Length: 291
Image (cartoon, rainbow, N blue to C red; front, side, top):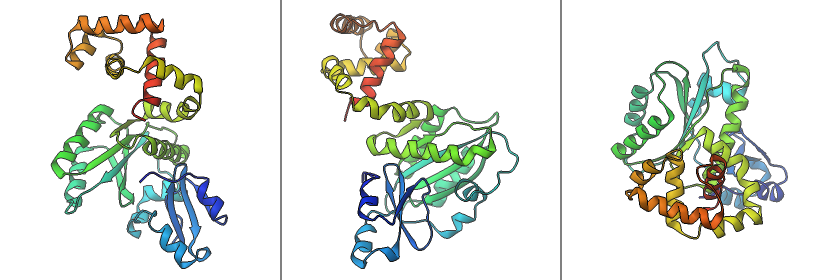
């Protein structure tokens, strides 16, 4: 279910508020919106309004999760202990009946050797707090590990790997911004599984201005009417401009890829050997393709 527009609910229920905290208090109803979470006092709602809005509210986790130190740090302003740089990995779950949650969490504990805490903030959203060290997995390996767990446990996860932050006093604020980025991208990329911090942040911060530009939309329509060229550009981007690697990824002959690139460059007057031109094409495809 796509999150609601953050302006809709406050307009209907003016006593409510929107912030980045996934939990308010026991007297409030909390609903995910595109810019965070909408909280409204249950006493401000009629029984019918409460019943309707509860359809959009995620099932909350057990109160014991709030006893975790890192929950208190991220959401309640508790003091951060002396620690190496930390990152937060956010895992969104879609589970099947009979999900072996305890066993799944045990596998995660075994995999992440620098894990300092983990807890659910919603029934379908797990946070992993990981400190920086010599045994951290590269981002792509993390995605591969969760892909393997998805197969083993018959679940579907979407994973956002945050950046390592060295300043403990800004950890909570940095996490809240990362959570906003992840929530915003999930709303528009609900079939994507892997959310690395760098590319996800770029998409989030530049996405809306680009989407709103008739010129940029027009360029996308002019340049990428051929879906095969989109695949070639994506492979070329992933291979950092290496045509041979892109051809291998696409199971195409290198000369075929070169021919298609030459035709594209002739039509657009771009030079895909120029990283600025390649970045620009990548931007248009990421913002407009499959939408």
